[in-house]
Amino acid sequence: MLDLTKLTTETRNPKTMELDCKTPLEIVTIMNEEDLNVVKGVKEVLPQVAQTIEWCANAIENGGRIIYIGAGTSGRLGLLDSVECPPTFGVSPELVVGLIAGGEKAFIKAVEGAEDKPELGVEDLKNINVTNKDVVIGLAASGRTPYVIGALEYANELGCKTVAVACNKNSKVGQVAQVAIEPDNGPEVLTGSTRLKSGTSQKMICNMISTGTMVRCGKVYQNLMVDVMQTNEKLVARAEKIIVEATGCSKEEAQKARVESNGKVKTAIAMILLNCDFDTASKKLEEAKGHIREAIECK
Image (cartoon, rainbow, N blue to C red; front, side, top):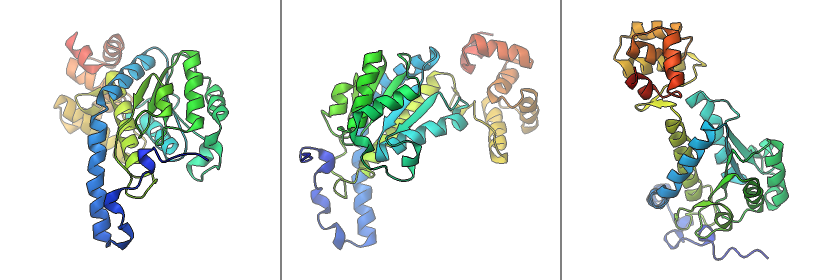
């Protein structure tokens, strides 16, 4: 029988032993207090998160990808982060990939037993043609998921950079990966329910990895999403607002620049800041590898 007694994520929280006797306000109060431990736990692993960002940025600049792989809640969080990257940063859906044990259908309904088979993790990586240019990030709250371990071991064999995100110290996935991100959040409010504090900490870490990577890759100017996709009226308005805030121009000038740049916010900003046409701005950005600040400083 699998022994879970040594896993922090599976131990009972002494502060919530009478949880079933609490009022709704008492329940949410203690959950809120416990969530503070998530922030503290993540703070302790920031150097490992930063290392991961460096690897991911280098991978993307050299034709690689970020690949999240996990099971259950962990897998869903990786998928969530991956699907939010294209609209936020204007990147291809193939650049940040999310894999979950049991396939995409497992996002909605659990596929029993899928996480217990390491060979399925290997198979899923093979199906997306993983190469040594990619960074493979294994997500496993418990830190012992066979599906994730199998994937990380295979990625190591290929020469990929590998990272584990777990919520137990000295985890099995952490021992397999080249970098282990293991925040200590303390026991869950509801024993073993890793969709709570563990899930929150993993979401925070994924947010940091993808956002930090995209900043390093020139998808951000100042603190603005300069490659945001415009798929609806709200996002068109946001794009024009970004142009105004980045350049100090009028709303009318921003609208004109957005149209002349074919909806490319980054190029519109460069056109205004460099006082040039679309072709010149595009060339400057290409020379600066997409970084607006470098493009305007090298004029």
